[in-house]
Amino acid sequence: MLLRQDLGLEAEFRVALEWSFANRIMTWLQRRSGPAPSPARTGLARVLSALAAPFSVFGSEISSLQAEVFGASGEYARAVLTGLGQRLAVLPCVLALEALADGGLRERGCINPAAWLGPDDWASRLSARGIRFDGHA
Image (cartoon, rainbow, N blue to C red; front, side, top):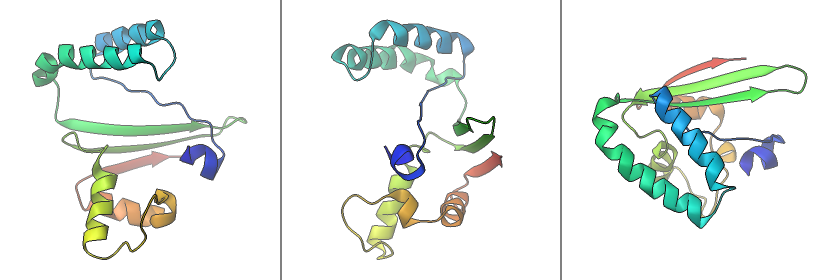
């Protein structure tokens, strides 16, 4: 929603696992479950999560979040955040809670992350928590 509303971008989100075989299975199961959201997809996610749990000991502690943008005229940009532990998804919420607690964020309600902090502020706050940023445009 924010990408379309603020930047005029259509976006597609994908999850990738460390094992290529697991990625192929997930892709196949996703195609079979139909469009999201659906009760079948929710059930599938629960089953896959339970099946994957025993194999989590074989993964690494590295987490990664990557975004790629492809322009209509061939432009390309990539941003990658990496860190240790599985915390990248929740870290923006932690930063917002800290700002609420210390009085640095006075607004209330649903706040657009792009309007709250500029790119340099986001980068410095993530860097302070050991998150590394790599980008290419």
